[in-house]
Image (cartoon, rainbow, N blue to C red; front, side):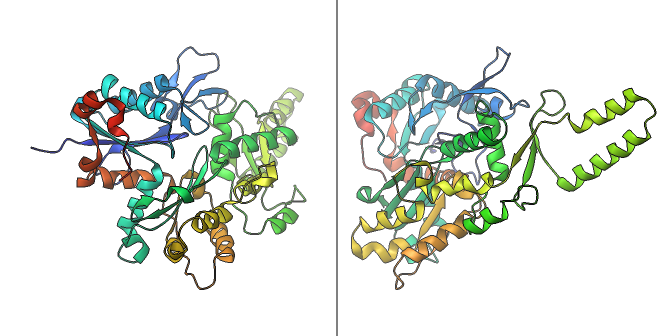
Amino acid sequence: MSTPPVVAIDNGGGNVKIGMAGQAAPTRVFPNASAKPKGERQTLIADLLADSKEVSQMQLKRPFDRGYLCNLDLQREIWSRAVRTIVRRTPGECGLLLTEPLFNFDEIRAGTQQVAFEEMGFRSLYAAPAPLFSMHAAAGLLGTSLPAARTGAGVVVDAGFSFTHVVPFFKGQVLEGGVRRINLGGKAMTNYLKELVSYRSLNMMDETFLMDLVKEQLCFVSQDVKADLRAAQNAARSPHRREFVLPDGVHNLRGYLRDPGQWAEKVESIKQAVRAAESMEEKKRLAAQLESDQVLVLNNERFMVPELLFHPDDIGLGQAGVAEAVVQAVTATHPALAPLLYSNVVLTGGVSGCPGFKDRFSAELRALVPDDHSLHVYQPQDPAVFAWEGMSMFGSSYLYNTVAVTKAQYEESGSRAANRQYA
């Protein structure tokens, strides 16, 4: 009897990654949210939101709040559409592999099982935290080169949408006593960016979806904050200055990064045309082109926003930075494990893909790790989908069937059937 296919869903607070287990990459990545464009009745969800040409004045509604699944009705709509229209599968013919938050609440887990089995009709289900699948992927990729990876030991730094988790592993198991959480992630960074630009420039407090795009395009991690701040003091000549043209709702729907050289040439061309124009009306029409675009200027905000992960106290959060949190996590485990854990530190989550993150993190962590311990920091090519890649490997192996709860087991034992240790 053939094994049923498995739908793998990395159900993040910010984005959903979905595909069939065994694939090299997810079929689609889309926002885990619904949104209603201003002035329209239609609500966009899942891939419809990702494909929307309009990004301004989106009123987002997310099923996740503070890192936990709180709106199961909305989440069910998103899953149902994704399974039906993206992977094009019938749930009754498939198993479901799903990510859930670390230390998930039993009530949320029970509700998730009810949706998966009773409302959607999946044949089987296994849910576990994303870092477990990231470690599984790292073991598959690095196992031949790192002793720690071969034994399932290491530390996963999962910098996601709601939080940043530091999760130590040994023999593939989460060392729960060593898990550390920083209450900062992509959502907090976007909110901070909105506050900075709204205070200094334009009011962008209602433009969460748009500012997410701006953050992803323009933010980077500084390797020397003091030097970059000095360079940014003269805003007009700052090497970090960037201009983002905001959507106008007519010709420019998603906004774009303006090239300074091309814009300077355009300005000079318009000025020449104004001087050559014969009528005053023509001069005014040409001159209006210089003022038609609404431009958001970013300077030191580009690197001060990601700086929160290294210095949470910048916004009054009394927690350790990400490098120090790794040391705290390792210190909380058995001392004999420290050399293994430091030799396999894996960076995952969309935030860790910010340019410069690995270099800054490695430099700060190296200064905190004892000199006699080797340090190896691994950053996958796309940290945002690395957990899903591990899910794909896990779901297409024999491991899934050894731990997944079948629909028959659920009907017999209820939610207690899935209250088991992570594989």
